Image (tube, rainbow, N blue to C red; front, side):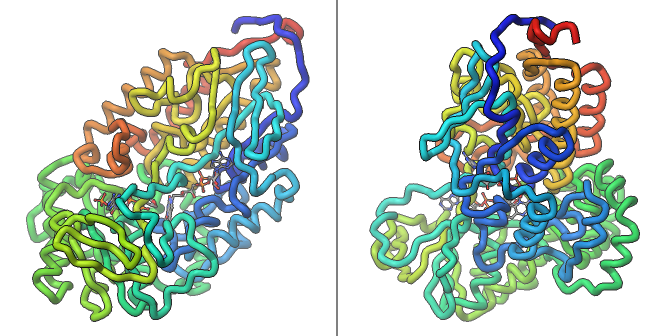
Length: 545
Ligand code: FAD
Ligand code: NA7
């Protein structure tokens, strides 16, 4: 550890947290209530909850089963908070997060409606200056970004977009006063959000027109009511459940399979696929059936063929079935839903394949496709996803050492050390930063918050002035993530996981795909080795501590 003799200018607060979703809420609690630091969180939304504050579109819900889509750090809260459906509807998750904020009285240190526009590190003082959209600035020793990895909306720049005379909305900014009952609704996008919206909107809209770019592999979610007896049984088992989750791969609360798909007979494969189709859940279908669906092309093709056979069985109109049937690799974030393909059997739903018949323009009345047809709608919904992972970082004037903007560091795509720190950005941390784990996210968020909290706690105890990863450590972690990702089939599918959904975005590995268990082990090893890969400085004033 080196020492510096920079002057000790007092900060306004010890720590700033940016964002008040699952990540920011727990981070604020950790810093303030467990580490005893002064901390403030800035949130650009008008309420806490992040994803669950903004995504209020019809059908919005978790696709992780509710019993593991929550925090695990508070055992009393686990026993107190009930659920009544297998997946959590958006209002339920929002109410839960609001409850957590109230439970720990975090609201007094959360500034809502406050967007951070800049966070700049000053090498003379070793402090961050954080500036908000209303021009206010404050200094802090630590900055933790909890900006969300699926939080910066992607709204494609389709010609005529601004001429539409009806309501045009992105699902991540659903207006409270928008009721689609009886209306003519168009939706662009058939990802996780789009499929949720389509199933729900079909039951409300007068007519629903789906503009589909890519057909999707979607399995049933198995959603339905959960009775109180099952809730109580789960509560009794929570210790074992969380232990399993933390040691697993995808952290979805089921045991991943250890069996290779091609090691069993075709009949047995079909039986296992059917069994998991009946149980429901996208991650279960991809990781709970066989261990190599996401890695072995032959196994992947078998799973894909099974789903295709289901589409053929379910969808009544052969041409609609053909358009809904994917032919590519099954390697996007796996989708699940209740009755997605069945929805296309409804009279009030029509499908337009914009791969074959592209959107030419948006008109005042609706959407015109290449065949000249103008699809008239009252409401046009962009379920077009997010500038994922690094989008919200680049949106800020975020500068580390030497005044270098984060974009200058991330010319080849976003990188990090361990998904939570960045070389050249001292005392700055990230929750769900680039190359963090690809899992059910709350357990990974908790893992990162706990680890960052321990690192900051140790730094405080040891009189550390700055802590940041070395460039070599970051390069090593990036190489590890690339190596692991390239062992999977995910890079072969065009999706947000690698940035392929944003025109002009550099395709890059953005996740650590070895699972939460391996990730937690790596974090433990780094900490046990005295925060291997991190450089720490101490001020002369505290050097003797
Ligand atoms: P977020 O909840 O995105 O919060 C980030 C916050 O930072 C936002 O409130 C944002 O306003 C704020 N912010 C960003 N930039 C600034 C700034 N410059 N200044 C001030 N504030 C800022 N994950 C799962 O694991 N399972 C699921 O079932 C699941 N379902 C999902 C369903 C939907 C519809 C969506 C969109 C995502 C889903 N996700 C799911 C991913 C989900 O985002 C995470 O599970 C989790 O909610 C992320 O929490 P977070 O705090 O990291 O980010
Ligand atoms: P996704 O998964 O990125 O899906 C976005 C959808 O929008 C997808 O079907 C895209 O087509 C489509 N899209 C995107 N841009 C365009 C343009 N320009 N034209 C037509 N269609 C377009 O985002 P989601 O919100 O559904 O899900 C993101 C995550 O959030 C999800 O995994 C959950 O964790 C919650 P494509 O299929 O790429 O051809």
